[in-house]
Length: 100
Ligand code: NFA
Image 1 (cartoon, rainbow, N blue to C red):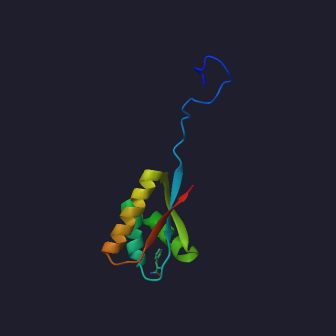
Image 2 (cartoon, rainbow, N blue to C red):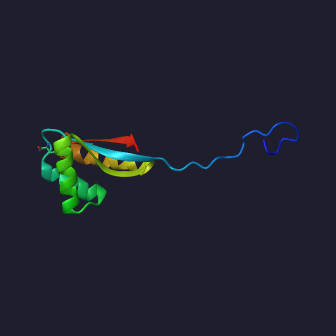
Image 3 (cartoon, rainbow, N blue to C red):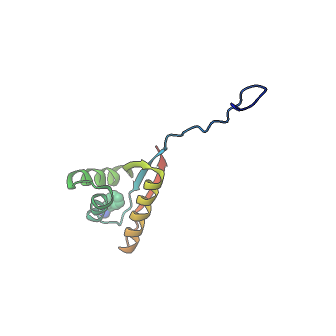
């Protein structure tokens, strides 16, 4: 290492890592009401009505869509918040993480 008295240099320095980003994905299903999905996108992803409606329709038509991209811990929290809120309201809405 850099402190070695003799010998070849070795890598011992701490390498700062960029925080890796994760996409929060929303999955389509046949049962969750469109209005509920729009509410979720507004409440947990701070979208306005127009943006939330656009993302909801994208998920409805394509099967999956991106709600946002966040550092791991925040993405994980959002997934848990959405899944808890959906379960509390007895909707099967699913959310997941994917490395960006
Ligand atoms: N496909 C659902 C319906 O027709 C709406 C929906 C959109 C559900 C996006 C989940 C995600 N009621």
